[in-house]
Length: 628
Image (tube, rainbow, N blue to C red; front, side, top):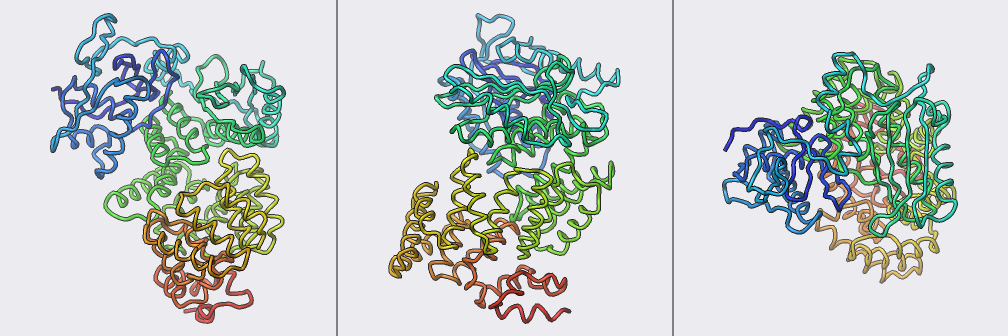
């Protein structure tokens, strides 16, 4: 077996595993009968590592060296990737390949690879590292420049000093984008035009200018079609000129009422792809960096995204372009999100990697707010003062185009109980970035908690109507409705939200009991929630909320503490909800905020939580006013 070093996806030519065409440079696999599927970077790396040894065995140590750059990696990380590849084997056809586990040794990919030079003849294995001719497939034909000429294009661009980025901005720095929306067979009349109108109005002209498609600008196309019986919008972003598509999102259109949500997702992803050229000094970026950044934007734009996928895309972009500042500090933010509340050697290594990436970004531009946003998220879980300081630095730096330093301020304020100030920050963010889903939902929550439930309810209803993740919005709305005693809404929502079956039963019992003032039903719901609290996998805002309202305040606080230990400071906001009012009066609450360092932060900073300046403040607040 050959000794293979670290894998460079960009320089690995396409190859086949039976009918499956594998294109490492763009991380896609496809067959003649299936649409291209994009794999996570790590999954593609492991697939290449297994395939290129010609049926040999690859040990775990070799996988770590070749695919994880010799970082500290737990068994779960490798097992997850192997499991993903095994699912892939059956996703594009029956038994395309198998991955054998060789006990205490490693893994082996067993398949018949098509000999590219003699298509009619199959062999047991074909070396990928050698000179395999490019295989032209439907997927390749759609991107001839990106695949067949990636290496030549990158070398030529560097030699000529040409930026390969797709952005097109006017002299005032505002990105310009042409839109084209078409409807496939079966699309209802008017849907395509409605989507075009929504896409064109998502952002103001000071942030994105929609122009005539005949001009030499970046172009975003959207085609409404069907996939697997579901209506889907197929997007395609192309740079100015005749460059290949570099971003091809697929957004489900599950309901005609969700057109606005689809428009936000498409335009948000396009703006993300365009952002580096518009808001940062252009540098020569390779097609690999562009493609990897687009992959990050695609995942980041989803309602429920994978931090692992985002992290791997950013790592690839940075390897291709080390001076890619926005990718550097974005990597810091994504690593922070992935390790929230966890501990151990792997987490320590990821946090250190994130801080190195942010240091590199700061060397390129110390005045960019993104640097301090990333530092705030990378701060140790109990370093409330450190996060506070980074928020101030971010606000004093060059603002991000989309106001993310304001969003950070709102998030951090909410985790320390400053709900009124957090609401004001999220509303300022929405003035900069109208319709941004996270800030819209958080504003609705904070409005409801501050006694302005009718305003929050209107926002929840609108968000539920337009979002592709309607159940997620409705679950948050359900909790707010119960706190506001809006029983008609609560009883309707408790039957429509998607919860695991035991939690659904407990929540339905709680809502019925509270609405009917049936103490026995509420007590029974409390018992159900108490049983669920024994399983850390079920920790959530809903569980803590249910325990608190079902007359289990001490257990609600204990569960919140365990959830903080498992998932970090972002879980703390639930402690300040109306549902936890009684729990905040308990000695357990005082003990929790003391243990995690929050009481010390409040005392030393004088930045007291809102519940301490409201009627009925808990006994804890008297001790917080004695600053040391």
